[in-house]
Image (tube, rainbow, N blue to C red; front, side):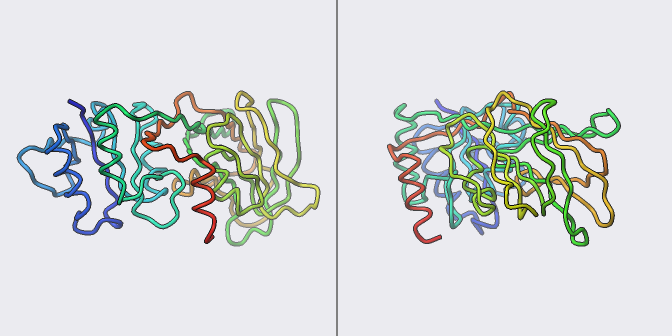
Length: 283
């Protein structure tokens, strides 16, 4: 029997109406179901466990929410390598490609072994201060270095390995994965990239130069961003728009492809281009 964990965005499913229906279907179809302690859903056939244990022992995780929910779960799951089935309860979902109306067909396909696993690369960002590693962030979409409210422009030096590629005066700088190419990077003028490709995008945000454009680099390169001197204000690093920390002058951020990837379950034949056309037509 397949073991499945359930992670739900409470704001997207108030009262857990959809979650309870899915749990009922899973139990009736022979799945072993795990949920977190704090979900407050009670059923004698449920296994209520710690979230990390759920991630570790489940064959896959159903994530109910939007793309933002997937981004958070992806960072938590990176050390477990457990596949995700993303169910879209939000508005514009590129990663949560299963719509609620299709969930039971998708689960039936998983039950019968009719599915594929799609690998999505993630980023690892190590922040160094005075040669000491300060902290590490993981990101599925992007690592963003941006100015605070009072700072007019950030000054950043970007390297590929030890080779200087540009000195940026801009509102910020985005390092994106192919998955992130349809997120902030797209709004900043970056290209749309098939999410199964292995590359990274370096995109300046509102650069103070007409020559500054997105640079595409292979995924085995290391991108190093150096914070130049600040006059006033603050500068921040943010991972997937959710986790952030303040940076100081001379901090260096080493960005690489993460060792593990996000594993997305695909239960239909829709291509990325079908999803792209449908998601962007009203954008």
